[in-house]
Each structure stands twice: as structure tokens, then as C-alpha cells.
Image 1 (cartoon, helix red, strand yellow):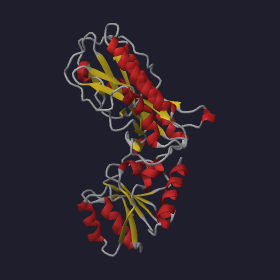
Image 2 (cartoon, helix red, strand yellow):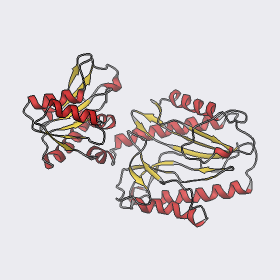
Image 3 (cartoon, one colour):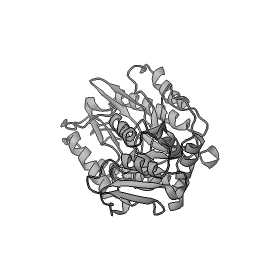
Image 4 (tube, rainbow, N blue to C red):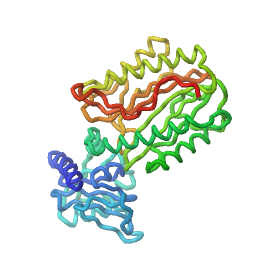
Length: 369
């Protein structure tokens, strides 16, 4: 396990050295966790010129929880209580050890923190590390994919249990809370993101926040949830009909979104352009007259954060690699009537390995509950 994190730090160190920086300061929590094995609250990682110089700087005493313990090969330093900003302390340490340049995550640093670094180490040359760590995180190793797979199983299980319960008369908010409780009951760290339950005219709306609206007979019910497991986050979304056989318009809309989602899933392959995956799903909906009001993206990467690169959008640049987990989540919302969303988490695999690996396996049949 330690070798995994050391290898990741070496890859980043090589990038920094190639860019002319002798050290790097990692402050974004997900990036700290990726490189250190844990991300104690407000901790930063100082990446030195050699592995033995790497240092995790934490505010206050160390956290003894197993999930908060960093890579055992990594040195740690805990600041005294009220001992100041760990990022500033790391810059001070680097200067004392003779460092002259430091790459920082400018997209994560606040202006105030940047000024503090300048103040404590005025002779230190600061450079922008950019999204170097995020780029390393795109392709997952099999251990990471295993965590996503377990998270998907937990989410499937929680959703399956909900579908077996009585739904009519219950509120969106109550159903969302029950789903999140079931996730934890089945071993999740917690929900991967706030669970969305949408009924009737709210259904199919992306990012819908549950309300006190009660489930009624004949409603579309769309659910989007995810489990976090050992820090890794997956996503699943399904749409159902409540109580009665679906109306003709519901069947037609569902079949359309299902076809779009299938087109997106089938286009996932190493070497496929991000924009082509988006286009495959989007053109199915466009051709049926739903060009207006479609979501800005068809899918996105998942991992230590629920919304990572790559972004599957019409203007996205880049191509998929093997072992990249992504969502495919097209949807249509008809104002005042409701709509459909279908969302899966998959891992890009070459055709020789069976093609994309579907992690979320709850049925996509239009069920009447």
C-alpha cells in the first residue's frame, strides 16, 4: 500500500522537476489524500526533491482514526494548537532547508494564503502546479476501481430496498433521508453527494433538492444517489412510475432517454473523444426535438470527488483512456409534467476486456412501483 502512494508522489515529483520546481505544495484535500493516503483536516503535503523530504503538515495533534492515518513512509509534522496555517509553515520549512522554488495549486489557494506564503518566504519562487495532480487521478488503478465497485454495490442495494417499500404518500425529503441511512447501514462512509429524490413535475430535473412534495399515483419518480466507500464516490440514477401502468407519454419519453443513455454507454472506449461520447447521447435527444434545455454535460469522471475530469461535454477536448470511471447520465425534463433521468457509473475498458464495465446494475426497465 505504501508503495502505491510513494509511486504517485514520484510521478508528481518528476513533473515538478521537469518544470523547474524543486518542491510542490499540495493543499486541495482530495489531492492530499491521493498522494498521502489520508487527508487530515486542513493538512497540506510538501513534496520535496527526494522521497525522504516529503512532509505532511497538520494543524493540531494527529488524528488516530484508521482512515486518517497517512502512508507510513511519509514524515508528518503536527503544528501546536493555534500554530498557524500549515501551508505557511510548510513554506517556512522549505526555506529553512534551502529550497528556492515551490509549485503551488493556485486554483485552490486563496489570495490571502498566497500573500501569506509570499510574506513568510519572500525569496521563494512560486510557480503554478496547475491541475497536475488531478490529471494523475484520472486513470484509476484496480484498487481504486475496487472501491468504486463496492460503493456501487452499496448504492444498488440501498435503492433496491427502497423500491420494495410503500412509496405513495411519502415526501421526497423523507425518501432521500431513508436512502442515505440505508447507504450507511450497508457500509458506506456516507452519501457521495446530497441524494436527489424528485416526484411528479420535479422528476427528471438535474440536481433537484428534495422537497416536502408527497409521492402520488401516476407520478414519475426519479432518484439519484451515490455511496462513498473508502473515500471513493460513485453515482446511480433511475426513474420509475408510481402505482399504475405508465401513460403513453411516459413510456415514449423513457424509451427515448434510455436509447440516449445506451448510445452514450456503448461509445465508451479507450481513444474515444470526450465530445463524441456526449454527442452520441445528445443527438438521440436532439433528433426527437429536445435540443433545448438539455443538461450541459452527458457525464463526468468520478473518484475521490464525485465530479472529476474528464467532463463529457460538447466542447470537451481529450480522449478517454482505459481504467477511467465515468458517469453517463442523460435526461429530459418537461416543465410542469416531469421527466426522466438514467445515470450509471462505468469504467472504460478495451473491447478485448469486454468493453465498458457497468458498476451500477439496478435494472433500467421502466417499473411501475
